[in-house]
Amino acid sequence: MLNKIYDWVDERLDITPIWRDIADHEVPEHVNPAHHFSAFIYCFGGLTFFVTVIQILSGMFLTMYYTPDIENAWKSVYYLQNEVAFGEIVRGMHHWGASLVIVMMFLHTLRVFFTGSYKKPRELNWMVGVMIFIVMLGLGFTGYLLPWDMKALFATKVGIEIAASVPFIGEWIKILLAGDATILGAQTLTRFFAIHVFFLPAALLGLLAAHFIMIRRQGISGPL
Ligand code: HEM
Image (cartoon, rainbow, N blue to C red; front, side, top):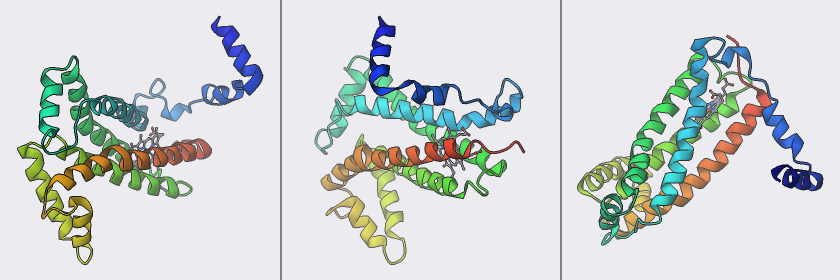
């Protein structure tokens, strides 16, 4: 049955070469932990991607309950955590995943650095990586405010004040982030929500696509 559906689609769209290109791509020995155990350091990029996918999926489910206004944000998180079936697990995945993804990305960056993989011809991909790094930190910063509890408020206040201390453009960054509030208010939460669930994820998807396309075109670096 499945075979028939596959053949039907393949006859019309010629999809076999697309997945063959991925499935038949040989993994070089020097990045395969089955050959040399130390090659596990080459798995960090894939693991970072895995946790990123978990973040996107768990985050999508969180938005089904989360309410981005200062009256209801904390209550909605409390409700999700304590009343909704599996709410605690989904929130827990997103909460711990947020730290894990930064740790994995950092390990991946260290691997790329110490194997010298940022050198010619991969300079552009390194630069895309730096942009990904900034976007991921931005996701962490904006997500932290969303539960609207004391920890979130005070941490974000400090964060915005640091941004405001940037020479020349600091005040603009502050207005951009905080909205019309003196430091933290209703508009700040709405903005952080928009940045956290629309702007940065969209940027991340584009950057990751560029990252992966370049990896496929250039192949993996090494062996050392
Ligand atoms: C969400 C974050 C990221 C994901 C999911 C990701 C994913 C990957 C994957 C799957 C690879 C293939 C090789 C490997 O797994 O080690 C790779 C390679 C690479 N990544 Fe990333 N990456 C991320 C962030 C970064 C950052 C922050 C940098 C640098 C600042 C970076 C720079 C590179 C470079 C230069 C390569 C090519 C390495 C080579 O050919 O040896 N990546 N990335």
